[in-house]
Image (cartoon, rainbow, N blue to C red; front, side):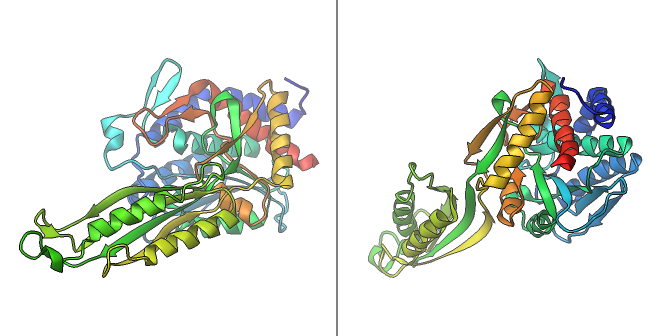
Amino acid sequence: MADVGQREKAVLDWLADQRGAMLALLETLVNTDSGSYDKAGVDKVGAHLRSFLESHGIPCETIPNARFGDALRATVTNGAGAASNSTILVMGHRDTVFPKDEASRRPFRIENGRAYGPGVCDMKAGLVMNAFVLAALKRAGAAPAPVVGLFTADEEIGSPSGRPLIEAEARKARAVFNAEPGRPHNAVVTGRKGGIFMRLAVAGKAAHSGANFGDGISAIEELARKITALHALTDLDKGVTVNVGKIAGGQTVNTVAPFAEAEVDLRFVTPADRDAAMAEIERIVRTSFVPGSRAQIEIAAEFLPLVPGERSQALFEHYAACSAALGTPVESQFTGGCADSGFAAAVGAPTICAVGPVGGRAHSPDEYLELDTVVPRAQALALAIMRLGAD
């Protein structure tokens, strides 16, 4: 380990002793169902985090929401001023993609150096890491500026309530660290695609499929033709993909289908690619391949891309230098997945993502967390925050 100051050493040493406590809190969070639409569960995860933070003398503010989970905002100041554009933001989401009772079906377990369970890496380990880093900074009086911990509730469905909170906090931040799961080879994410989730509805006309076939207008046929056209918009060289991931429709097997619907996923690298793809999608929606059919599309959720810039690159280099000083080199990575980090970067805040403990296979029953990365990742984040004061 490179030379560190007295306060830095106090923070790093305390975190080094917290592995057992970190895993205990992680087990509690993983064993608490918190699907995006399970407000009670998401709020229960928030209550566990609040209890931990307040036990370390960290004040927490609840930002209520009637539909989704409440947001939680924790602040460590150590007497530092709270002037505009002076804060350091660490953030993460409490919701998962899993249904109610998933935690009881496959609760937290440890096996061969890995932890398993719903949301264990995406991103309850990151929440635990952020909470312990805040506690370490508070204990040692080591925050170089106000450090804000934002724990949101609905990232997995596009952050309908979280986005404005993230944007407001990011506008005041000199640096943003999003604790999504770290990637193999100790990588963090410095670039992400943007994404739009859409609902496509097609209307046709019902008719008996034997006696009056010609009177019908098949919404299913129209949807099928639109799907072919939509998928043709994929351009892998540009990083633009269009995927129809879910379809439904029809009335009975012997009726020409009067309705059909689909859910569409668009991914893109740049805002210009987004606009070009959306123009083509809207053209396809307006086109009636089956005469007489009608269609409409609506955006259900949208993620902004995390576009690398000079200030975000400088933040990555700062973080990487701090991690290397602790004996753990860091790589950077671009990914097609979306995250809240795009919202922070889009308002101009230097942002890096996936600084949480390393894991993989998110959103699946095989989701895992590499236990040996929990403490080192917490130490790297803490050191990066403390040394921002010298920049």
